Image (cartoon, rainbow, N blue to C red; front, top):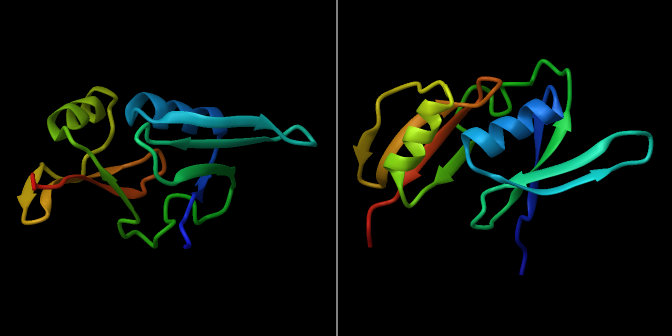
Amino acid sequence: MLRITDLTYLVRDLDEAIAFFVDALGFTIRSDEPRPGGGRRVVVGPDGGGPGLVLKITDSPTLGRQAGGSVAFFLHTDDFAATHARLVAHGVTLREEPRHEEWGTVVIFEDLYGNPWDLIEPPAA
């Protein structure tokens, strides 16, 4: 069996990115380990498990366009109203008003660098 455990996520600054993921999204720091040469390997992710994001510092022009402007990150929640309120309270940019689709309640929001994410609460089974 194959499974994806972590994905590299490009950031400008580790501490700035950690604050966004932990404070605005409610992620946890799964690891924050020093590396030879003074760097750090930081992995953040949702408390409920699944793949983590390995935060990688870059000054690449791809920062904020990791999927060419398309939504590349899909964050599921079991409490859309609370998660949406958390995003708003932390000043996260929403690209639209929440909407109801056949696959659930959804809103597109932006991370620190303008990457679009979908916040989705799937319909009850």
